[in-house]
Structures are given as structure tokens and as C-alpha cells.
Amino acid sequence: MGRIRRFLRDLGEDGVAVIEFGLIGSAYILMLVAAIEVGYMLFVQAALDNAARDAARQIRTGQVQTAGNPANAFKTLLCNDLGSLIPCASLVYQSTSFWNWSSAQSQVDAPLTRDKNGNVVGTGFDGGGSSGEIEVVQVTYNYPFFTPWIGSLLGGSTGSALLVSTVVFQNEPY
Image (cartoon, rainbow, N blue to C red; front, side, top):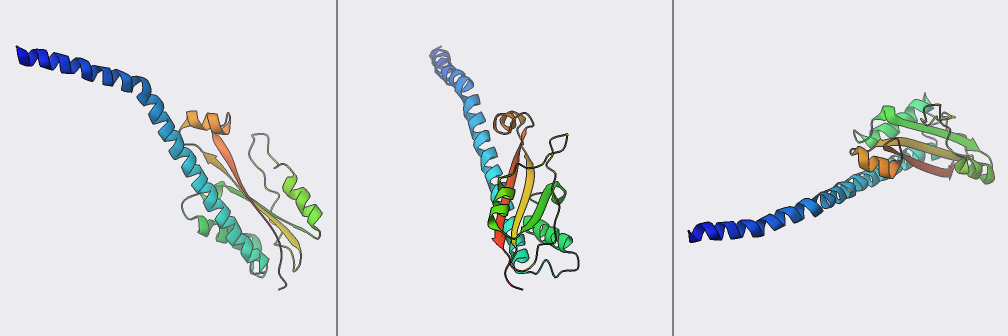
């Protein structure tokens, strides 16, 4: 009989812990998932920045411009750097050449062009410019959140966030 009383008393104390976890545990798990989601998104942004810088470096030195197909060479460099982290078909990139810094700044400050569905539309790849020209390279990726609820909180109604990497430089003499 004493064992049964002890079991019932222990069950009452353990039941409080279960109820407390039920009240607080879901919020804790949600915050943990949100932290993982945002951390992964920042990792993808860093990888996108790195790939854009590496591919832009090839434009800066003239290696892309001297390739047979500069746009394809740039895309290949960009996609190879990202590996399987970001699907290459999901990237939108553009490259525009200028002869003065103020025009390049206005390109950087301009809002991205979107189609009727809200997707970013690239202005194309202009071939990388010539020696001494100022180049603005932008690469965008619409990052889809794994958890739609967190995506709606962080990315708006689409459940995704637009990741943008912009590289501005002056081409070297080549």
C-alpha cells in the first residue's frame, strides 16, 4: 500500500513538470527552430556573397570578358562556387558597366525590378565591361523558409526572403 501511495505522490509531482513543459516547451521549441532557420539563412547569404565576390573578381581581371561566352562563364563561376547549396536556376544576376561612380551609385540605390508575380527580373549581363570601367554586379536569391510560419514573420506574406549580394568595383587594366 505504501508503494502505491508513493507512486501516486511521485506521479503528481511529475505531472506538474509535464504541464509546465506543455505550456513553455512549445514556445522554447519554436524559438529554437527560428534560431536554426535564421542561422541557416545567414549562412546561405554568406555563401551567396562569397560566390558573387569570387565571380566578380574574374570580371575585374578580365578573365570573363575574354571567355568565348562571358555570360555563360560568369554563370558557371557563380554556380560552381555555390555547389548544391543554392540551385543555379533560382539565381537572378545582372552586371552593368558605368564610366563614373555616381552612375554606379544610382544603380546600387535603385530598387530591384520585379515582374507582375513579384519575382526579381535581372537586367542581364552586359559582358563585364572593358578595362577601367566601373562594374555593378548583383546576384539575388529568393530564399524559401523551411517553416512557413517563421517565414511569414520574417519574410512577409510570401514565406521567403530576398537575399541580395552586390559587388561594385573598377575593372583592372587587361
